[in-house]
Length: 77
Image (cartoon, rainbow, N blue to C red; front, top):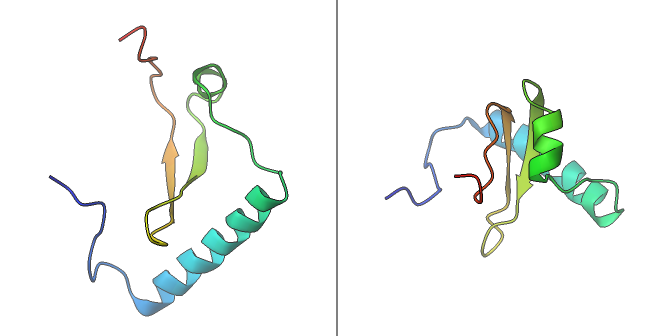
């Protein structure tokens, strides 16, 4: 089972850039300028690159960037 943590996979400069992006996204969240990703919104964004913020346990917050593919709700699955 994957713990969600990848050790020693990034250089110090990559970690600094990621933290800067994370801090900027947290500021946007606190200002109410981010959107919640719903199934309906995800279907509208299919094929587009998005960046999400995952709030982790004990300050293990991180961002992920990916392209939205097929969207299937849990109800449809």
